[in-house]
Length: 359
Length: 278
Image (cartoon, rainbow over all chains, first blue to last red):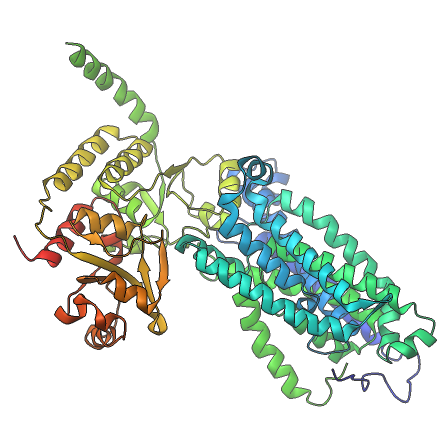
């Protein structure tokens, strides 16, 4: 794996050189997110508008059951969940790129996506075979629960493989992740073979991701986990910055490298596991958002992590609005939207900034 | 005497029941065969939207499409403002149904099945949901009579293989417990592939071993001539009796596999394709 160190400003610039710019971007992204949240509550297939309903309510008109359900049971949990999922995907991507010192790194590298995907596939295909008592217990949440468990199991497995004498080798983890990916892919293949055609449809839709299944229950289960994971990231920023110089140097700088790796991996597994479990396979957010930000605010994780969270959330809400209005009253899987917008846009940015895109 | 009394009581009760149900009802039909049944019952004026799999009769395509039946979005469904949702078994996902129940919209699931009895059950269940059980009983009896009237007894039943797709030279065929298996039986054929349930890719050797006399596929757009040639030149297919006689039947997928009011037509069409007219 190439260690890209060119992103470290050399000779070192004055501290805070890009701080002003980063602060401006931070504020901009926060405003953008706020706009997206309001828009997400306002836009939708049904034409119900948050503002209209609020005005009507303020002037003493009762809100109809239909409006209530659309605003509070459909759009509100969906918007919150979309923001949290977007934030966790983008931040996880940024953390992984920092930890692996590889611009292509994304949460998939710690095996969490592969494991979660396998968990979901197994739940979809084998769900009917569960003992009835268990099926009653988990009910409609069998797939998210299995996805979350699968994500965690594979992360722990990879971590154990890559850790020797208390030191975790990111290179071993990367390679073992590829091996584990091949294995989960094979088991997924068996499941696809066993699936009937309805289950095949479900698998396809799951793989393309969707926020359509957002409910308060999902939000209450996944939300705290994602928030907790995001809350640890500010403590990672200094360590990830130091790590750009290499593990040994980071250690000399007083960074508890091993502990930081543990926290980073747990954070990513928690945030991504929860996000994937509730929204399926939404690709590209973890790559596009951090790189886009590095171009404008530089590689310092102090700003990169929080702004990634804001922009990731705003980006996913925007994509979700397109996904649920473009073919209304039907819905386009959101993974298609993120990749269709993200891919070409990212290419354009790369072409404009060739040579600038260092980590 | 007792019968007379019972039917009298039903007649008295029925108007009251239908009055309450009829008031400005907006029906969303999910599942191709459910939509066909709604039309066959003459209740299509109450339909306000459909799902992607509902494509017959053609006029139904003018109605808004709320998406694929297993991937419905709650707001998409609510946006067409239904007061009653009639859905084929397997529609979902659960989260969407949960939200719709929260919005107090009745969601009626119609059981699926692939034999003669299942068609009648389905029709009656849809009619019940629409509040027209007498029409339902009548239509179910009609369709059932049509199915019963089919003379599918033949001296030498054909071995039939239903091929769902031949993507990349891989034969996806129907095993047992599928709509294809059901319609082959109704048409007086024998499913040549019985080793598994559902639709699965077959190895070339299994295709040879199944030795179908006739191959049935769904019609698709495009050049059938060249598609047929491709099928017959498939190494495994070319070894079958079907290839020697070039016996291939193509029937519209929804007609063939829908298990609705057009199933007698589908069975008759398939029967005459298998055994010739009369």
